[in-house]
Amino acid sequence: MLDAHFDIYRYFVIVKSSMSTKKSLKIQPSFKKILKKLSQFLLARPFISVAVLFILLLILIVTGFVLRTKKQVEVTDILTPKAVEIFQIGQAPTIKVLAEVEKENVITIVAQKPGIVQKLYVEEGEHVNARGTTLAYIADNYQGGSVATLSRKMAQKQFENVRDTFDLQKNLLGKQKEIAQKTDENSDELREINAQSIDETKALISLNEEILSYVDRNLELYEASNSAQVNRDVIAGQKQLKSSFLAATNQLRSALRSTEYSVDSDNPPAQLSDLSREVTLKSLELQEKALELNREISQLQYQMAQVSEAVAYPSSISNGDIEKIHVRVGQYVSLGTPLITMSGCNKAVTATAYVSRQLAQGISLYQSATLKLGEQDFEQTPVFISSEAVRGLSYAVKFAIPEEYYDQVTDLEFIEIELPVAQANTSAIFPFVPIDSVYQSTSGSFIYLNEAGVARVRAVTLGEVYGQFVAVTIGLENADQVIVDRNVIDGDLVEVK
Image (cartoon, rainbow, N blue to C red; front, side):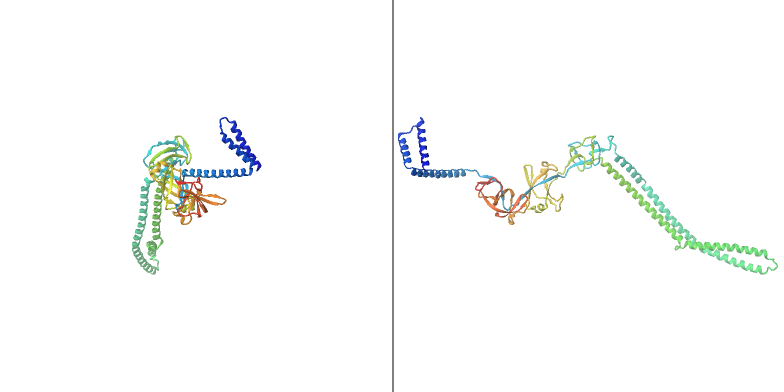
């Protein structure tokens, strides 16, 4: 306590001495007397002086606190509200994905065979009027030769020969069929003729048999009266006559049997004739079909040769404009080398995002996705969502880009798409909030809400993470406005961007 009193006394002494040394400071005599009496009083009563000093110090602290609080209130009153982004509970969350742009009419023609670029028939910027227009010629050597062209000419000559001789060969086959038919008919006619001669042969045989009977009776008579060998010569003549008629009769009987055998349709001769006709006709039919097949094969070989030759002549697949020529005359190209890029007149553009199965099944069909083209955005609903994985384990979500945005995108570039991944009114189950709006600490998770223009903190319980969003199982109600920006504290004035 004495030390404190001594410090106070020393303070007043220093102030008094300093005031006396400054010439510019003119102190009144009455003030000097008061200061002298005060110092004497403090030296005489140290305990009272310390108490008074503490009271003055307390008054000074309270006064400073009141003034500082008033100043803070005045500063708060003039603060500008912070512009923040709001996520309304009940709206569908979105996930940002990249989508690949495909201009369906932008095609790069590539080399389908290795070789030397011999000719270029188009220039950059030129318009191609029709599909199938020849764009370039790729030769096998620097002299411009092409084995495919020679093969095509050989196949063409062979086909022309087969085509020109086809009718003649088919006519010859028809004649051979007619010959086979006529031969069979001739055999039938001969059998008919032989059948007609059977009765005549039988009659002749019967006549010969009667003559033989007459000769036999004469021989019996001559032999009976030939006691003196007077009829020897006559008997010999009769026997010779009998032998002649027997030989003739045997020949007639043999001819009769042969004729009867040949004219019978159940016997092999008649069957052989029919079989021969059928075999000949069938063989000629096979030859005719082989002839037709040969013509078709020759035509197909000619077409194959044309296809092989066309590989050396890259052509357009539609009408359009030549955008870029990637090669020059005399350059060697290998299989698959880009030759010419062209764009068709049909300005159809699609953007395809490849997403997981969970995301593909959860895309909202009630809200449009937002496609970002540079600084310009537009909304579009997907035209197709694949039900099976099309690229690895990813599913395709395809969007059609309107024709007015055709010139703002490039083929095979990637654009950003915001996909709505849940149906509207998500608070019916658990509301979703952006992950960026959630603050986490050792004490738990909390978010800031916009309550009548003031940021207020609220503790929440989190659920499953869904892309860039997380479910809030406890702590949020429908129509709550979640502040997404992370530049606010509890009590800040805010306004929605």
